Image 1: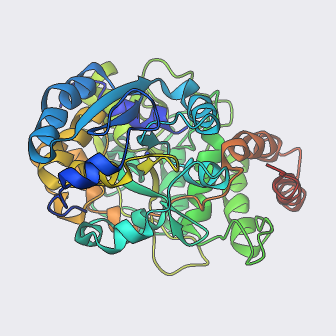
Image 2 (image 1 turned 30 degrees about the vertical axis):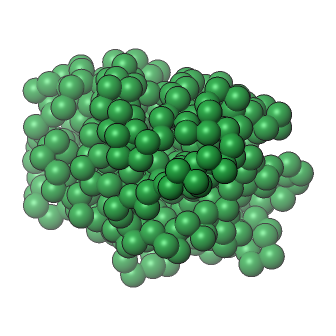
Length: 429
């Protein structure tokens, strides 16, 4: 795989098939034009976000012509960078000019569904046998209030990533990697005692919301619920407390260093050897490709890790999805296009050029994934994502800011989690 493909996964966050249903000439003619005003009755519009030149070329030169040949429906491609895309989509939805099919970031479904911008897809999904090939938890990630609003197409799986050479120097057997927090702590302690790196564990601290994402992974590993059954924030519950206590303890005990902040340029801490353990994904392997190719063979994917409140470990997933505009005048064609892209022979190229891991269970051994991608796909069944909520676009930054004094020891666990709960409960949309 070409360099930089996988690195786009990390920048996002923070993303099953069946034979085409086909469209009759009558259905296309009766449906009118696309809501975007840029397509006629035999066209739909497709908004892609953060796509590379390779991704746009694949869609323009291969996927879209193939789709038109099979269905007679043309696809008008639109594109945007990630940074401005959410605002563009919400503005377009308000003026009923949203593209028929849109790429959504990992936590965008609930905010847009709450704004009544997305078409409910339950009836389409009920008749789509391809849903059974998609990892069930990833399909669930496209729901809001028990309604399917989006379909996953690519994932960023965040699993434990280790530096094999550093573990060996510390006397740790790379064939016996941690599956619990206690085991993770024991490995980190051995690395610390060997005095071979600055920060045995790197929790993803950067100039954005990396700390919040690291904490989120601990929450998911420990089975924590973000919300109670009546919608109240639930971070101050036992699993959440255990997650924050464990996180803080690694800083207190010198197993992690809150001064190790990744700037976004150059080698990431695990690649640079500043840390031996991280909760990354393909971005680490891509970063090694770009900055330290000899280190790549030293990066290994560990098994899912379980906190004390659960019996089985898990990895985290940031999942990109496809959705249909509520105002699309050709929703049948739009969903047929989604079906088309989710067919294995199309999704393999779409995910490859988009720099993502597949969401289908039957694509775990695709050659283009390479050893690292295949290793991550082996733990994909355990993947969990942050629970949907209309305020998730704002919550990451808010939680990150509240966590910073906690890991520096200036605010206690209970006060931090109470503040997080109060901040999230004050969200008004």
